[in-house]
Length: 126
Picture 1 (cartoon, rainbow, N blue to C red):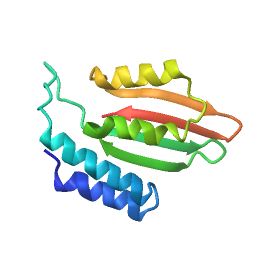
Picture 2: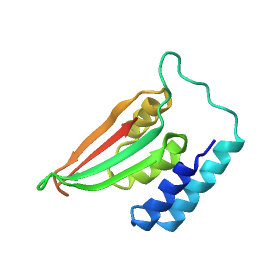
Picture 3: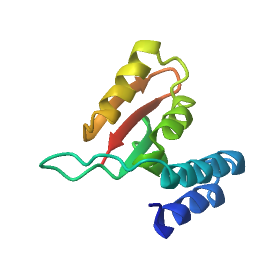
């Protein structure tokens, strides 16, 4: 079930300009669908991951340009949003990213350096 914290996080991302109002609405709709859908099976021996995090770092300064946390239940929407920061991601990379997330893998699942833009994109499941 979506918590107030998850909804407030989405609204905060809209307010800070990290996502558009349309993307926020899509996330909120996905939360509602997740609530009405079947319950997910929990992982044996480990707690289920709760957050999908996209971090974009400026290589020159080492400062975070973007640090977005999305409830892991909205991972498909989150991956689509994160893909806009890695526009040249190949189909195989995209599929292996989704597979790692859906299999319950935790920690860093993607690390890409874009020297042209001077950015590093990291995706975590925590």
